[in-house]
Image 1 (tube, rainbow, N blue to C red):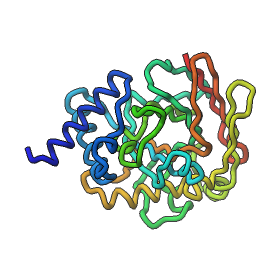
Image 2 (cartoon, rainbow, N blue to C red; image 1 turned 120 degrees about the vertical axis):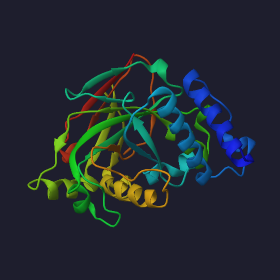
Image 3 (cartoon, one colour; image 1 turned 30 degrees about the horizontal axis):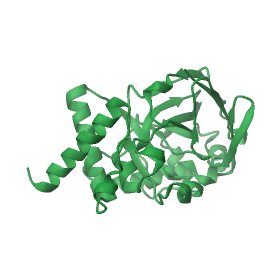
Image 4 (cartoon, rainbow, N blue to C red; image 1 turned 90 degrees about the vertical axis):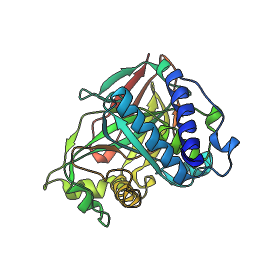
Length: 275
C-alpha cells in the first residue's frame, strides 16, 4: 500500500469510528492542511466501499450539500459537495409526519429541502424543464445533518470526507411530475418561499433560488461534477436526490417538532419531531 492510499485508509477509519461512536474528532485539515476536496472524495469512496462490503449498506440516492450560496460565508465552505444516501438513512413519511431519535446524531441540524425521484439520467447541459422531464416526483424533505467536527468548524474537504455531513433524510408526500404540471413546477422552483418553524415559531425563510438558482439546477451541477469523477456512478433512474437546504441549517433538540411550508411550490408540508 503506497503512502497516499495508506493515509486515505487511515482517515476513512477515523471517520467511520466517529460516525459509529456518535463522537467528534479534530478536522482532518487541522492535522494536514494540504488535505483537499479531490482527496476527500477518495476518502468518501473508501468509506462507502467499506460500508457496502462489510455492512451491506445499500445506496438509494444522493444528497447535495452547500448548494445554498447565502450560507457559504457562515460556514466557510464556498462550493457544493455530495454524498450517497442509504436505504437505512432515508425515511418516507407520506402522511407528512415523522419522529427521529436525536441520540443517533452529533450536533444535529435540520435542513428543509426539495427532494427529487429520478426516472431517467439527468442531462449535464439541461435547463429546469429538461431536468424535470427526467423526474418522477418531487417532495418536501428534511435532511438531518451532523458534524463530526466540534462546533461545525471545518473546510469543504473535511465535510465532504465526513459522509457529506449526512445523518438522515425524511421525505414527505410526493408530487408527481407530469406533462401538465412540468412547466408550472419549473417556474415555481426558483420563486417559491419556504417557511421553517419550530413549534409555532417561524425560525427562518428562504427562496428556491437560494439553491443554485433552482433546486432543479442543483441536479445539473451534480451531473456535471460526476462526469469528472469516474470513480462514482452517474445519476440514474430510481435515485432519490435531495438538493440542499433552502434556509440555513438549524440546531435541533429532543422534544422539538419542526415543520415546513413550501408556499407556491404546492408541496404538502412536513413535520418532524425529535425524540
